[in-house]
Image (cartoon, rainbow, N blue to C red; front, top):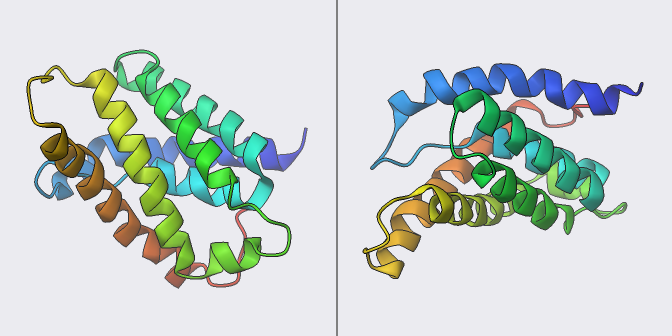
Length: 162
């Protein structure tokens, strides 16, 4: 079996542990960065849209099962995020996207969509203003995740996670 199918799952496990235990300590107005989404966007850009969509499904399914959240909410949001990130997978430009600050903008776009879809299915507060919900549950976590994703560019300038 190819390592490109197993290695993301092996990276997913420690990131899930970090995401559920340590990352909530760094919450900013109840917004936390999504490390799993950063990994998903990186692999979606590297290997294509179909790979990113399937990997998003697997990551979301495992996240829902392990954390005990509403089954299907993270699965749907991560699948959509992997699909969107896969649009930026171009054989000629994937090294440019994965190694520059464009990566952070792609992560921010995917994180905003991921956060909005996830909060739509998992929140119980449907009486709130939609614009406020977009800002608190979508834009802030997306921006926070994009800022954290800059570390991928800084610490992995020429390397590939494959």
